[in-house]
Image (cartoon, rainbow, N blue to C red; front, top):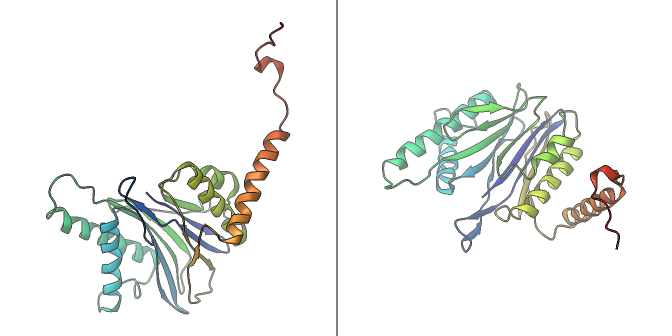
Length: 248
């Protein structure tokens, strides 16, 4: 399975993806799900993928191959909206191509998050559904997710706002992943992370967080300890909530 999150904050963007792919309990592999298309000083476009691995890999490969061609591609479209339309069209193209060649009811669907910034434009984050339609992150909803989102979403809902700093967003995102991995074995390490500062257009590099990463281990421990301490410090429940004591 997969868990990906993309945050659209006032000061920049945060992207985090896991890398576990499984086709059964004895077929667990590691595949990158975060991809970068960039022109230093002019644009950064980040893709995050979930769903059928063969489909998503074909989509990314086609987008990469066409990035040096003469037609519209991710390195020459004018806006993030146009980039998202291009990714959506490529999804439909791959699914339509492969559906005619495969027998049975193979699920070819995949989803993508598309985010970044192109010079003279605003930062944006979009979520593309398997059908090719998409939605956009807003100030009221400053993050979008793919895959196993339910375990990590409460952390984001309670703590993340559009005005949060990049550092706060990163911490919130990592705890969201820690919570997800504790409850769902189909999401796992390593994690791929990219933090982009608004209007920087610098050469972006993703950072891979492994299970023995010192910072990730530190916040895991501190978060777990803090939860135990806060639970213990909550007020005692009133007597009306509790059954009467048994007198021997």
